[in-house]
Image 1 (cartoon, protein in one colour):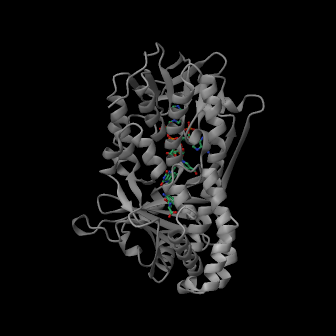
Image 2 (cartoon, helix red, strand yellow):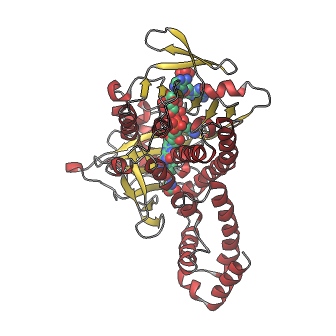
Image 3 (cartoon, helix red, strand yellow):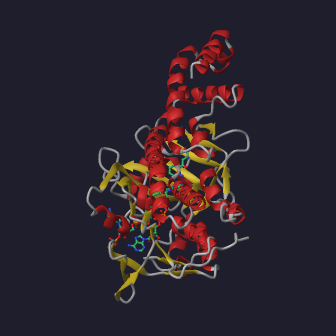
Length: 458
Ligand SMILES: Cc1cc2nc3c(=O)[nH]c(=O)nc-3n(C[C@H](O)[C@H](O)[C@H](O)COP(=O)(O)OP(=O)(O)OC[C@H]3O[C@@H](n4cnc5c(N)ncnc54)[C@H](O)[C@@H]3O)c2cc1C
Ligand SMILES: NC(=O)C1=CN([C@@H]2O[C@H](COP(=O)(O)OP(=O)(O)OC[C@H]3O[C@@H](n4cnc5c(N)ncnc54)[C@H](OP(=O)(O)O)[C@@H]3O)[C@@H](O)[C@H]2O)C=CC1
Ligand SMILES: Nc1ccccc1C(=O)C[C@H](N)C(=O)O
């Protein structure tokens, strides 16, 4: 049920970008009684049919669920999500090792980007005071004059639209941010990895059966590169290869179908038979780049605010970009409750000050998880350390929570706090692990004494 609406403002709030975060934001703002107008550069994905061909999935976790719960739509999404309870690591001989994500029953969820986007669009469009106009690209923004300059992509017609409040939710290559960047003392940085990514398909088995463990996120860690796979509802998996652009083993070095087959056969032998389209997909699918974008400020006076990837694009390795964007919506909604809608300037100011340290921490966490996923998860000592940490958490609940759980399953803990606590715990583990060779060593009196001493001095 919608909460009781305030008196609708005459002029619509404008949202630039009807991606995942923009559509969720529209649902939040319309609940407050505001008319909302979303503009989107691309055609309507529900009509275009183009995106359906690619079933790309995302990991949705507790911060994202909280964002969806705020507008009462978790049930719609849970129906199409697949819980993934653990990492399954595949070594070069096809041997498997396992690492649970959290406690019994805790999972991250694989959801299709396309169905999530469609569900959000359908829900937003069903609201009487939400309008979505597709195929409209923001080309210029007059910040002091509060005017958008848009282009109708199909006809190339250009026109202006005035606004009072604008939310820039137009993704990593945000045009709204582009205008803010030209302000005096605006900070901006973009850092690319020397890696790109390629999306590939692991086929469904007969009758739509999953050919790998269904309720898991699969990882093929290979030291300086990796492949991952997330399950789809139709029995297939969406695999992503994260691989150097250049170098002896790189996108540049694999030039022919034979080279691709030889490489995959050598390093991912257990999964190659499940990838019948490998050759064509490898050359037909684009190689995506991986970038971290930081900027400041995120707002202009009381009229413009950036959210989602437009404010904080991060590399995908923690599976948190969309989750962080959904959390933006929750935080903005809370600030509007606390500070009131007569204080937009204060709301925008508080929002960026609260969020920036947290999304900066998330950007670091995402880079950190790249090394963990491509390298550490293949190391038995690392997996032993994780099992010991689970034991400490079970023995001292409230005093110890693994970093992964803080980031993924603890939406009350801001990212920056999670990261700081995680680094502190890691320092303790570095002192503890030299005393532990196998799991049962944890029970040794000297190890127990050390753990208690470390926790007492925390
Ligand atoms: C390979 C990969 C895997 C990922 N996996 C995960 C994951 O598992 N979990 C997770 O939480 N996150 C993941 N992410 C991150 C996630 O995709 C992004 O964080 C999320 O899409 C951000 O949503 P957004 O709405 O801010 O931006 P977008 O989804 O990019 O939406 C922006 C919208 O604005 C529109 N737009 C852009 N420019 C203009 C303009 N000039 N005028 C009008 N409209 C415009 C775009 O067409 C788009 O529809 C992944 C990212 C990548 C690359
Ligand atoms: N953090 C990360 O590493 C990544 C994040 N993402 C997120 O996912 C979203 C959707 O991705 P996807 O569909 O692959 O988007 P695309 O890469 O297809 O980009 C969409 C549009 O953004 C503009 N664009 C692309 N690359 C650049 C660039 N390097 N500099 C300036 N503009 C650029 C282009 O607009 P035009 O045609 O007008 O020039 C392009 O058509 C992105 O908006 C981003 O939020 C995606 C990839 C990596
Ligand atoms: N969705 C992703 C996309 C790309 C790379 C990683 C992910 C993950 O979700 C990783 C998961 N959080 C993990 O730590 O095992």
